[in-house]
Amino acid sequence: MTLIKTQALLLKKINFQDSSTIIHFFTREQGKIAVIAKGSRQLKSQFRGYLEPLNLLDIIYYEKSTRDVQTLSKADLIKNFVVNLKDIQATYFSLAILEVLDKIIHQNEENQALFDLTVKALKYIDKNSSEPETGFIVFLFGAIKILGYRMDLNHCNFCGRDLKNFYFDMKVPQPVCFNCSYHHFEEITADQLVWLKSVDNLDFVQEIPPIKQSQKSARIVAFLLAYAGMYFDFQPKLNSLEMLKYLN
Image 1 (cartoon, rainbow, N blue to C red):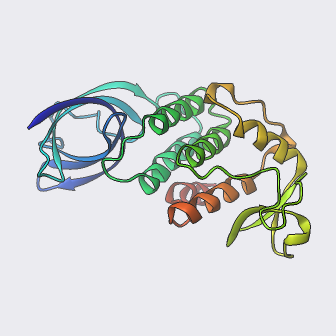
Image 2 (image 1 turned 90 degrees about the vertical axis):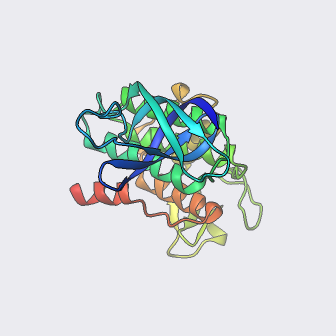
């Protein structure tokens, strides 16, 4: 049995027996893991208040290779990304990041670059709660690139023509020119494409370029979710964003 210490983000949790919890973490060094937090639902538990979504933690757990669920020993709070989120949209876009993470990463698959990107995106939304959609877009773009599915924003994916704007369909989430699109395709405008290209070249979330009102669109989110869903095999409708639509 090995004692492991790592940074972690809580993806989801499930009540287990009378007082314990099964936690699914995305960790910086070990990837996605499942642990049991014994007695965590008791009033005097050392874990009480720590095992919540949008908490960045330092955790220590016991790992045994023959087990699918490891045992959590200790958890210390590094950062709570909910404290400064006065806008409910910021909270739900942050939760949407965790929801996407849970869909696109595999168990015990280490990806420090993706972990760091996630933390930077959550920090961005925490500091810019009026622009949560921007942080979510940058996270999606970065995750798609890190996992090896970077898109071509310069050429039509069907005929190869240069793109000044592009069109997409939820069933065909690829940038295509007007000639290759159909009447039901959605447009990403030239102004929006310029901003997307600037995001595509980012290294750090803190360097996000300003976004004009003309560039803002739920279509960008829809396109990126459809694109990611196609490659990572998940439905582009996220519970977090559907709940946000309902509340709005």
